Length: 87
Image 1: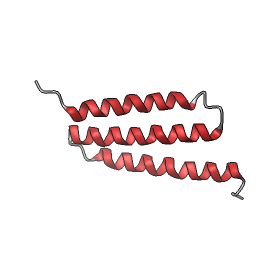
Image 2 (image 1 turned 120 degrees about the vertical axis):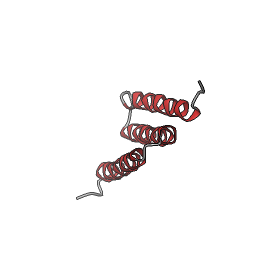
Image 3 (image 1 turned 180 degrees about the vertical axis):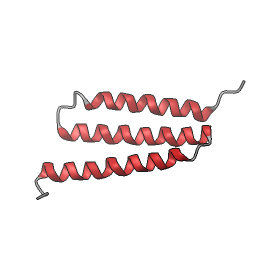
Image 4 (image 1 turned 30 degrees about the vertical axis):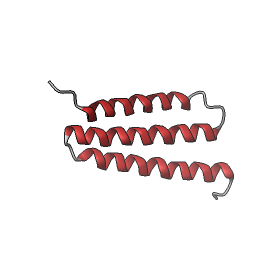
């Protein structure tokens, strides 16, 4: 029985993403929360891509890309509203 290093990497990325989500809750400012959400999403995407290499399923990169696009667009929108640039 061999240890799949990509599976171990995916689990580590998901654990780190969970830790970043825990940082979202006590964040003192909106900027801290936005950065924590972006870090969590980035780590979740990295975990999904590592899981893709391990499992060989090609739907995970599509979902990871979709998640990254949604989080990026949401971050831009929240920062515009917070700054007051949006109508």
